[in-house]
Image (tube, rainbow, N blue to C red):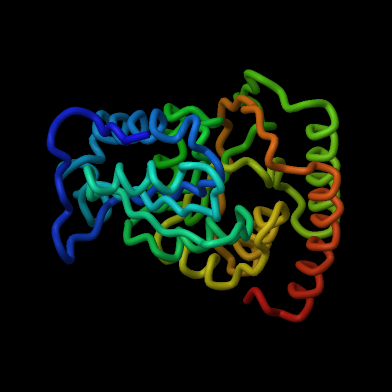
Length: 270
């Protein structure tokens, strides 16, 4: 399968030019949707004015955007699709692991490689619609250091729910994380989060978890670093995913939460 970027010649940022916005995509066996969604993402960012100089440049430094895709040891044709797309559009940067390490590892690898004034990570299946970029970016531009997409706050809307077991375990994980670690955060695991550059460096250079609980660790680090945090309501829809074994992932997440609590007590996130 070959990649098909939007028509036209994609502008190169040029050597030494920093983008205004970086978008990180963790990718694991997304071949069925990846080509279509990459095209949609690039077209959307161009339409929203991130594709070149203008207001976005004046508001914080940098110009244009980059997409940093991290292939997490995919077994399908995801890496071939990414490489073909990157050959046609230099704004796509492709990183990857030989073996699957987990979403947390892929997000961390991508976020630490970003060059943008703002950096956002999101799921390659676009379970959070692209239209939700606006409020998240606006919250970062208004001065918040980190912004979390929130599926459980007033104004949010879940258009398609997860299977009952997965949603129930997710709610239990959120409640336990609130009790053990960070009260006041209503949605830890939404895969749509944004950071200002310095905040991204501070948070992801301290993160350690590679699997399901990595989001909770990020929020703990944000808190320990004293960063300005916002939560924005988002629309979201569940996309079928057979790659996660929910019960074993949830069990591992409980142990990871205890690890985070111990690391926090030892001051390792400061």
